[in-house]
Image (cartoon, rainbow, N blue to C red; front, side, top):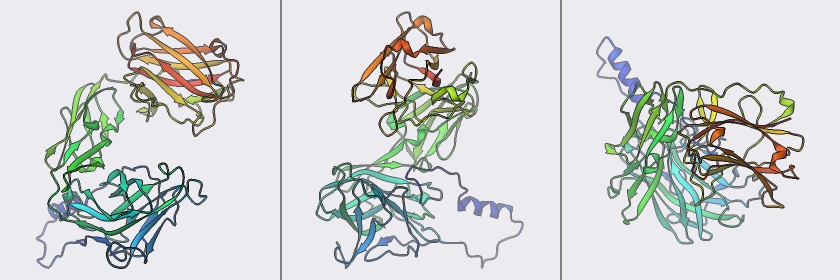
Length: 471
């Protein structure tokens, strides 16, 4: 079993291998040579699995492995359908249902199709987390999914457009699904799928490809940084019904271009590597259609790490974020308090040649949470809070960053705030803050659940490192 999180791996495609073999060969190929071909069967399940082999169902980690079965009593057409029993949220065998259907053997040639279709219904009105294809737990290169799919108690046909069929000349990931009970108050339910197959409709509108959520984003960076923001890609298709369908896609469907490859290069899977100082604009296209959105990299050269690695005895430290210590479990480094919060960044941290740094941009306030799915932090034995902060912009006299702690979030909540004005920071230089915990004026320190950085947009771009309590 694999985790549901997407995995990006580099591969050398079959076409490239064939090309290499041809150009390096010193003699003509025999007319009797037969090149490998792959099945062009579009059907995945009608009354039974079609051409899938004997070992094709792979559940996601944490999902209930027995959620899927063949139902000989219910069908849209023929005699059988695929049945999915979503478990209750407290089911000890798994608290959700999710898996992939992968061809057991060679992949299929899907280049002649333009959609994946199926008929579906449920035991009650529900919203399925996602349906898709392309996930195979091997390379996961050409994944495409549609999120938040509404099912009713009546059979309905669903369409997942293929972002670029020409890419799928050897695909093993035929179908994927994942869903839980967040919309049913933790209670399980059943849904059915029938007539699952790839088709050539010819009536799906040309895709509108999107990167960077359709925005023109500028990002400050440094040599050696790798940036995966281009992996937030998607396409919008107009279905035969006239409705628009959003398809979340992996970057491998796109062709990327950098205006200055010597400053920032971009791989086929959308990973940007900053190589030199300067500016580079990353754009993309899909099947010859220019994508909406871009990423501008402004590289300042070599990265300056925080002044000195922490050297305090680990026995006297409770670390929230630092490469020098083992960090306690953290829910998030950027708590999203919509619509009030504008802050971007924080998760995942930036990687500067192995030095992990949090970069908050568009900062107005942001919280690091340790109370939702992890245990709150007991700091009663600690005397100080240490934070390294670097302000990446000009500092005006009225600028400030307030540091706030909140104890027992949602209970008998108490908080304390320490203000740091403009004189506490220097533009483009690291500043270490060592704050006496007593200055927060909080009596109870047993359940620290939130650490806030608050600037009210007076300072909007900062690096943060080495966040830890110590004595």
